[in-house]
Image 1 (cartoon, rainbow, N blue to C red):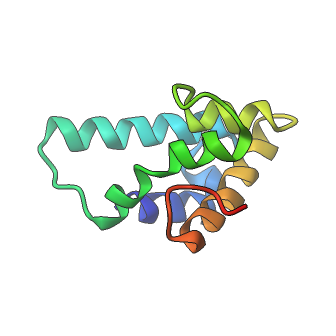
Image 2: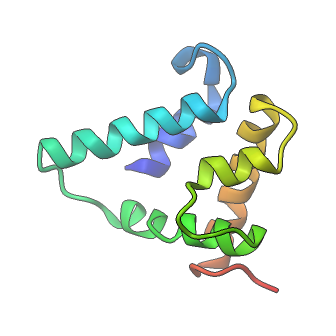
Length: 104
């Protein structure tokens, strides 16, 4: 489910967000996660796979695992739009690895 949401936003970011911004994308993610929890929506395999994205990003950037993936990506970017684009690059890289840890 979450990968489909991200795909739709990536294809038409200004349809879903007021601006191309990783922060706004992260708020959407939090909303989806909250709705899934509040309404007992079962998590699919994509959702379970995405659980590994945050520790993967943290390890890849040498950050603490307690910092959100959005904050880690923003710290290594020059603004919200670049962070938005970098998120999707990292997401594709993560999906290709098939692991929860970055390749070295």
